[in-house]
Length: 110
Length: 195
Image 1: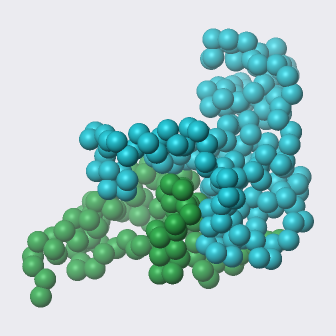
Image 2: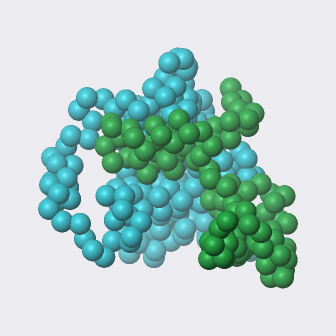
């Protein structure tokens, strides 16, 4: 059993997330899709949702947004790299921006 | 020139202004816009309040392979590639957006923007003319800038395996000493935790 406050937090976060997505998309669609790792289809759908629909979507006991790092080893390496010399954040950002961010994505045209 | 659309020209001027503000050299503007050299120089003076610097652009592909520049170049190029190849931005708008996103990240990291705009542009051009390639690090699986036709196999990036003297500059030492003595309280909480 989880306390109500945790459930509230999840729903708050869901709604904040969706509102943030809309704000970012409104400001600069492509940069937003980059930041959020959204494809064009999803971006269009979320951008077109009404506040009522956003609230409906948020009302769940599961989080809507997902962690970008899906591989535990990779995340571990990123955080516990003894040789990173303060470049951990740059490294994380580089890996998330990279084409390899989704293991299944068809990669490498060369 | 006579029947050129006014709107198209305005967009070109807008792009030129944006590029100048981000630190573009005149050669970048001449290549990427149809505006005349004379107008570009005038625009440059108006935006920057000084004459554009003269001289050749940096032309060495080796610079992008050296340690810190390589990390910055790779970060920028990963962003650019995503915007351009996957998210369907056209070349110049992907370039400007990617450069802004790069600057933003570097600022968050509290680092210097090692990769200037003109260098970033040179980087994109080098990729377009197949002088550079992306190699995947076998440690972190990140994509890093490398010379074209260099072996992809067993590539390890400069973060997973920095060269022995990497980052050991006098400046880095001073920063480390300062960081030991105090942590500014006005730092945002997330960053304070990361120190």
